[in-house]
Image 1 (tube, rainbow, N blue to C red):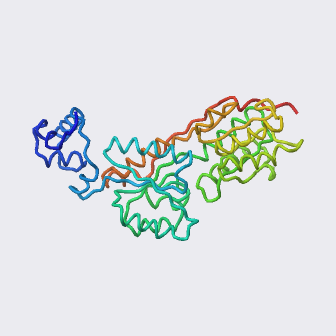
Image 2 (cartoon, rainbow, N blue to C red):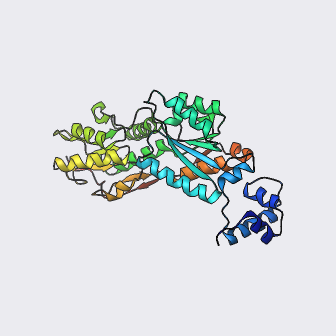
Image 3 (cartoon, rainbow, N blue to C red):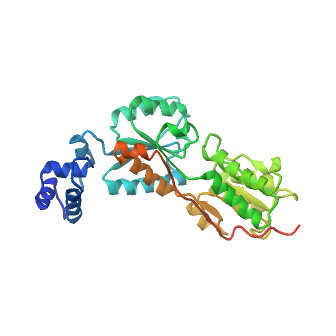
Length: 338
């Protein structure tokens, strides 16, 4: 049904325009039975209120912002999907913005965006969610924020996260259970909240098993395919190579697979390779990657819910932790005999 107005909803439900407005804007002072009746009519008529008109008729904005350092990454795309879906369900619109702190004018651009666009709240993703200068701009603007997986000042704002440390520990324990004792680790981007947590989980499992961590087996990456290749060249271009590589995201793990193929190192017979995130490439790679499924879309949806909730509810749920899953695929197998 097209062209449905708020007046049509009010007439069908037998209530005033103000009552419909209160229900749509999730305001209080509406009885539960009445609220349910109005929402039922909204569904029946397929009524979709305009977010900008709603903002004009209330003190709230129905426009949410999502801020990234790289809005085009696979990680960002998954978060955007989750946020967009939940925004549609709740009657919000989503604006996606990049914050490039390498630009000298990034602060002025961000301040102008927050001044010119009336946001009802903002979702900050790693690593910008941990940048003090970025946080200072948002605090000065008065825009409410929810951070995804913050590493610094974690209690300073509502947040959504998963347990990166436990996930990395479980992945390392899998490799140890498969008989691997010489395990290499390719870390993520410096300044990203997940980077030290994933290394800590790796270290936890290695120490609990009484296994030494060789310094030359621990390499710095930046979550890019390129650094996966660079790290794998150092690890595999030698007779003294590890039996397993834990790359802390799937793009770097794919780089390890490419180098293994180049050097004729069979995966998983001679080398197990595991990743983190369960990006689409984890299933497209050959062999498919053993990885940790990070609930990125669910995390973004939960962040939207925190921003959309009444202030009292969002304050009560300042930290939402969602479960991960270890996905065993053909890229990991028993350690080769030595």
